[in-house]
Length: 100
Length: 383
Image 1 (tube, each protein chain N blue to C red):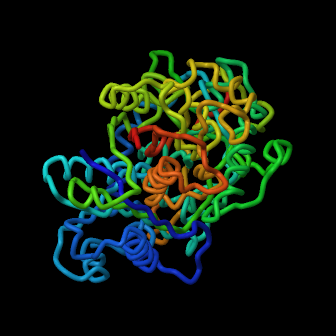
Image 2 (cartoon, rainbow over the protein chains, first blue to last red):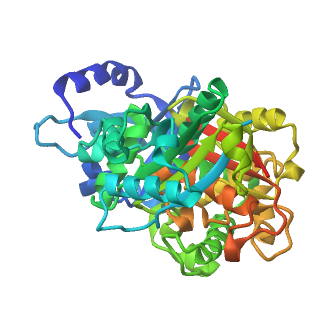
């Protein structure tokens, strides 16, 4: 499992268009058994969001307790560090969501 | 006509004394012995495995299998995530349709317990989209999201899921090769520690080692000498987008519906003709989806219908589901699962399933899904 600066750079081109967009949660879960790059953050919530024009995106929900997450809640997309820094020292930034 | 003429499986579970190709060795020679077939009678091998490359830097399996078997026959490795086994079987059927008078082994194997749960979960997520991986979502998480949508639409809760786990663990208690032999209560299933909300550990198939093999033939002479054989009536595959969010709907698996529709047409039989089915219960919700997607139960009703437990052995139902214990209790060594499903139907239709025998079963179905529904294989068999 490794990242590379080039791989992250390719992904940034898509992420740019998805930032600061408003939408609502159409499904969600809370991950207790994570992949290895996310071990330090577990448990954490992940949501599937539908933006106003019908586009959808997955991302973690920040600063929210499990009892406050529901289908239909309005959120906004933000840029955050998304996984642990691996042995190659590359910091991966990506999409997360916060409640409006 | 293509027939399954033999089956062997290793025990599923934490098999610390066996490496991946030790398991392959046991299953290859096990199935040859079981059927009294010499290895020189085998014309090709189809090998199903998902993660040996990702987890243990272990590839070029055709040559490794050649070293075990000796000789120079063609060996093909097939990968389609958790549907690798069903896909390998499908390709073997197509191979035999093109080659009359041939006999092949279809074998699946996976070695998972040498690694930490987080390492295995990471390797499994290689079968999801880049975006899903970046969000830190696991397969348990993706199915949990599908379950949440299903629950919201049809007003069910995780209590409805607990019947699947209860039933499959009961069946697992009757299967000597299952990873879990202990019966559980529905209460234990509901209260089990969380893996991905709303799923507890008893909603999820485990991390397992194991290998399963079948022998498949289009050789009429060989078939005439075998008294234990079943015919392949149909085997169909359908695919869908890798990303769950891009599917037509998320409260079910469309690829399963499409493959099932084609398989029933190909087999020229109806849902009522099937007495035993092995369906892909990687998570409890997946068995409910399977019952609807395969057309056994109407869309949106599985949450209610499972509560009558008439797909459980001993309750007098017309269709018994996952007599092996399913992925949930028999275990889920990914590459082996699709082959074990076919093997279980072989045992049932040839009256060799022992304590878990469904009396008088004449037609059976297997259903194997890859990822969150990006591939699905449905096959139908008859005595």
